[in-house]
Length: 121
Image (cartoon, rainbow, N blue to C red; front, side, top):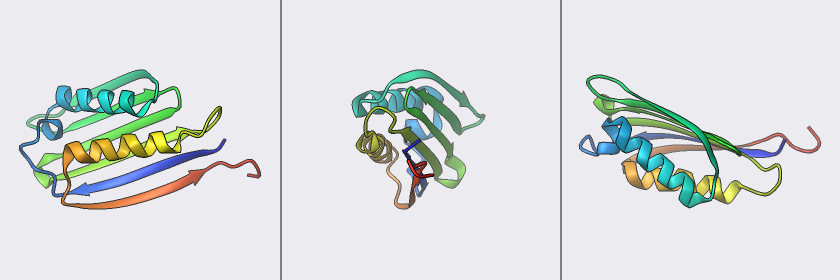
């Protein structure tokens, strides 16, 4: 199955950003960005760590979004994977990834894009 897997490591995210420290704020940002990118949410789960930090997943009809924050280190990991079964969803995956990057405002990033699957294996 053809798809794209976008992986990010975001450093230097501002500690005061609610989406960085609180599950409900990150959940709202992820769901909004997913909807605006034109992807289909079929489930989601976000967990609040104490005193801070969040892990969250959004299950997509097209695949998934996973995001994890470590406010004490100013660090976020994000993983967006979409399949291109019925249409090319690469631009939608990129839009979702970039929208979340704008919300969390890293000062430095690492980015990997992996093309998965393929008709010829």
